[in-house]
Length: 360
Image (tube, rainbow, N blue to C red; front, top):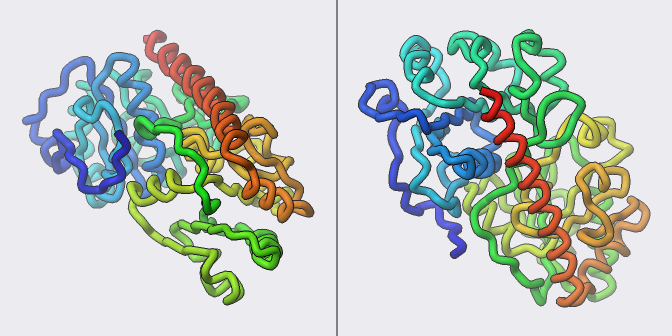
């Protein structure tokens, strides 16, 4: 069953103060996931799933906006949520938290950035071996002061880099393969410092060819918005900003393709080919949505002509047309190939998690 409902039932949901009160039983088969920021909750399901598959129950400390990211998670009864509004509640109660953390088999910090260095120090997470740290920007692993305190297996990343272990959280629940829409729908995120002129130009060209299509735009930033497109495309583009995770998942599920607009001529984007990972690939792997991606970045994410559409900036319009015109049978074949890739990445990531656990 596919559920995209932010009001779904969570059997075990508490305020974070319940964790500090010693009223919550924590057995030795529990893992704690801490997300210290108000983003990256698209990763939470995947990390939780790996631990559950290893035989553990999972407690998650998150902000309210992250709750709906688990709307399709299975088995939800293996998860307990502890909700906080501001990270200060953890910082101010660091001594109590240190006592609580001792009860967990493993602890995962879901997002590591320089700003949480002091938090890690206060909770003594750098001096214990059963703590893992997810670096979404692997360059931070080289520059942060505590890099030398961590063993290699404690550093996790979303791709296979020269440091740490690859643990790619591409699980969002049971996702039934959805057939291609009669009216082709593209999904894209509005991301800071990205360019969208090539998409607008291609959309105008396709519209002038009397080909019907839709583009769903979501995001937290207004880098790309309705004011950027000509009025002639108003019926083709649908902008949906700051939506919940459950709404995000529904939009992805109902789309046919994900456009990953990384540009090799954009210096910022080059980082996503060697030290960073774009979150859109997680959605592609998890929801089995073929992508449209520049050839410069394709192989880094294991995309090829069998599971996606690869373009050069000069031929994006034609590639977009090819995606629209792809028949149901060939689209399903492309999804099957993408599913094989997704399962392979999940299997490798689960193997890495099991190896980390076995080291203790």
